[in-house]
Length: 613
Image 1 (cartoon, helix red, strand yellow):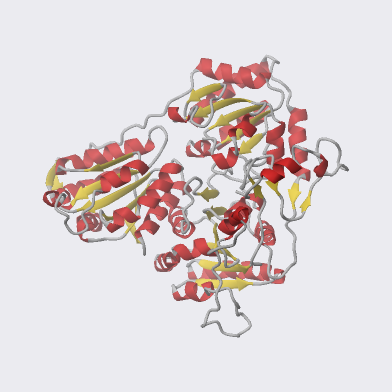
Image 2 (cartoon, rainbow, N blue to C red):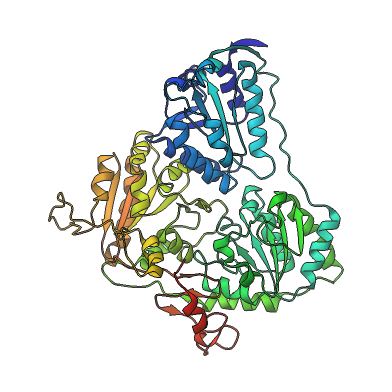
């Protein structure tokens, strides 16, 4: 046992729990914790330019690598309230991050003291646990409980609020005997696994829907083994993209209203059984429950009991960690195969693979200004299989999900449910801090990029190089596209004549913000691309600049102002605005897909569509 300040014990607990990096902004009420970190010297601190940015850096850090828990620090007042968006994003996607805020002294909590705010109450709806610690001796055990809660069951964020006098209080703490608590993870029973595999084996056209819970559980290899053992094609969700390589013969495409593949939706509509593992039936994956579930039976496996039946009632629900579930499913399926009773799925899997081969969207366009589809085609060509993509919401993300390829788990890092603009840049910095040797490519539209653009300076200061692709149409593109349903284009344009634009051959008439100039002003490098014949040279130069300067490099592509990206209100009614190269896969290679009512929505359904989201 040793006598020390509560904050000294706090830092020792953080280290024992595996924390080596923290993101934040110091301030008066959190300075004692910063002093303890400085004295100990084992936690690297990355200074954000905005506290919301720090919370998204913590998210990126956690999402990048198994076992990571990102930590963000600030005062309780404006810093804590700024971090709420990051806590919401983490909670929505089952991401554990720890937010520690410095609070006014206990005696001042009800006296409207400077920057004193009830951050505990504010944070409760968007965390697994939020607590203001009132006694110094509680600090180590509250942090121990925080890590246990974050890791147990469905992962999620925790906020711990520390009044400044609590931080400074003297306590007894035995660092040598401290041990993290073992997290709780529910597991499938043998009888549940047997029933699930029996149901799967009775189906004619089954699919596995693989969610982000499989990635959280580090069970992607088991998912592939299960799919290959049973011969059942896999539909990854957006959060599960990468659990099976895009070019695997059983990867059947993504399903949904926006971030989906044409072949994925068509295959889902032809299925008769869906085995969901580690997913939550997100509405932009399902569309209406009626269309999604019609003619299908469902099994749902999730680590969180209240997810089972939340969106719709499955035919069979199992509460289990994805890894534990897949281990049991594999064992039962292997026994069934050895007995010769496991169905042969080769014909169904072959049909799914054929749809994947022929139901493609066109991406090769030579127009200037650029069409976004061509940018993603070039990214597929120029970036290797182990590239880690980081992105948030917008047409940039939706088109990215439709055209890019992902081959490994944690190589598609996306805030799925919350989708806050500005998330991409700081999250990419957090990913870089977690993965110093990884090839990281962030993907933003111009508006997402502008939201927290100041965080580029963090990358320059702390030597966190990555490639940031900015597709610039000077529009709030997704909102503009949604406004079509209201027959308007109102307050969604970012275009203006920039008075500082020079006629130097690289001018951007009417596109507004000069992202190249801003990026360079923040200590980074930037390249602007306007035509297809500049692609290869630009990518090569960007990688060269990153290697030489060890700072973020912005690669901006100037797009045509308006391009509508494929999406719809139902999975059987997705509007294809651009050219497609597609033939009906279940009739013959010569039959136009327009004759297939499942793949092409009927005229009646088209008339019902009021918007494209």
